[in-house]
Amino acid sequence: MSDSSPARPAATAVIDVWCELQCPDCRSALDDLRALRARHGDRLELRLRHFPLEKHKHAFAAAQAAEEALEQGQGWAYVEAVLERVEELDRRGEAFLVEVARELGLDAEEFDTALIDGRHILIVDADQAEGKAIGVTGTPTYVVGGERLDGGKSQEGLRERIEEILDRLLPAGQRD
Image (tube, rainbow, N blue to C red):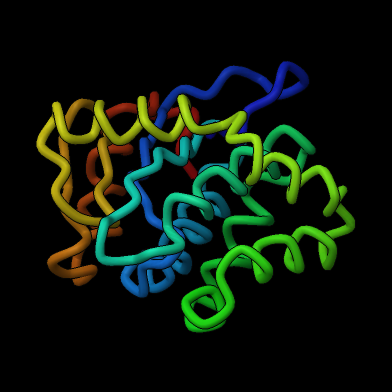
């Protein structure tokens, strides 16, 4: 899932964020992602890549729901809302996913239908397969400038490392 749109200027740096919406470590990474977006604005494209882990039984449905939110125009808002309440997703499952859609003003009935008909399964499967192919084993994992950074082991120092890579990728006149 990408937060870019045709109306936005082309990003000059892309971060693929391999994430799982039932993962507490991904919730911890939200502050870093927000700070990166605040600093770099339209020069940075964050692309959510799905990597549902088998140990979290609602992760696959949550990934599909995130794709439906993207289709309805609120991908990252939905992702952040779900990650902020990981424990509730763990307890309530798909009913919670539909409730978050409703809270954000999205078409909750369409969410429910999307979870039943599986229209986004191929996107989630493709992301997961690509993640495995490049060595993703846990979440969050970032790919910035061709470099894979594993945030599942520790978030410490990770934003600084991402900033170092972005400083190399973004032309000097485009950095803050």
